[in-house]
Amino acid sequence: MTTTETDARSSVRSAAHKRTRVAKSRVGLGLRIRRNWQLYAMLALPLIWLAVFAYWPMYGVIIAFKDYNVVSGIWGSPWAGMKYFERFVESYQFWKLIKNTIYLHVYELVATFPLPILLALFLNTVRKKWFSRSAQLITYAPHFISTVVVVGLVVVLTNPNTGVANKFIGLFGFGPVDIMGDAGMFRHIYVWSGAWQTMGFAAIIYLAALTSVPPELHEAAIVDGASRLRRMWHIDLPAIVPVAVILLILNIGSILSVGFEKVLLMQNNLNLDTAEVIDTYVYKIGLASAVPQFSYATAIGLFRSVIGLVLLVLANTFARRFAKSSLW
Image (tube, rainbow, N blue to C red; front, side, top):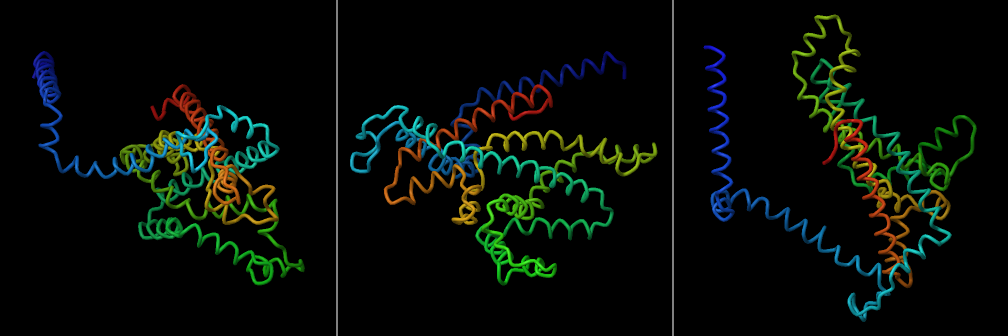
């Protein structure tokens, strides 16, 4: 077959595909729904959930700009403008909350973000499948343990009188230590208990990305004399970089949001200097206080969301320019 014949067949094929796409685009939405109603029915439930629990609550954001009271309702309450935003920025708690939240999130990001990548690379290079599967099962099983149970385990293990941690410290002649009451230890306990709980499950995403690596690349590298570490660095790692960049962008976008439930459960009167973050503060003034301040709490939550959105856009722009990978 000549080159001319090949080019002619390729042009005919592309023209046929183009006609097919044009024909599909001319089919009405109603007809497409009737033809594929099963797929649209499956899509309906997630869309309903998204509308009810993600978009409809945005209506309540209005109270951040009002002196809201329950009797008058949202629209009956008087407008307050930027009053509650200014109040938060000027409050003595502002910098403390910002510092605690960012410090905790950045510490968690730096300490735990590389761990699933390293675990996935390790499991991908293990030759014995039974060992790889067993290690994967053991590492991602903690993900299915409730946050309440995890915090309960931490409290029991660090108990000053009966905890295993204090029994171990006692072997070296030191007295019992109230680890959960130490403000300096709170961040370490939070981050590394979270790493134990989430590392294995997060590695599944990277393992899925590694399945796209053609085996021929490894075979060619072995023939060229590349070691396992070299193959991991030059073949496996570049394959998961796009996924890692996207997850990093999402993490940066949520820099002012940390695990609310876990932080709240680990808090006590002794470690509040480092344990009080924006999420727990919003909960306390908005719902747990004797006189709930709905407008003030909503303003703080909206402030956090706007900052997160700005950081997400900046991180995405930076990644698209330098890493050639982005969310949009």
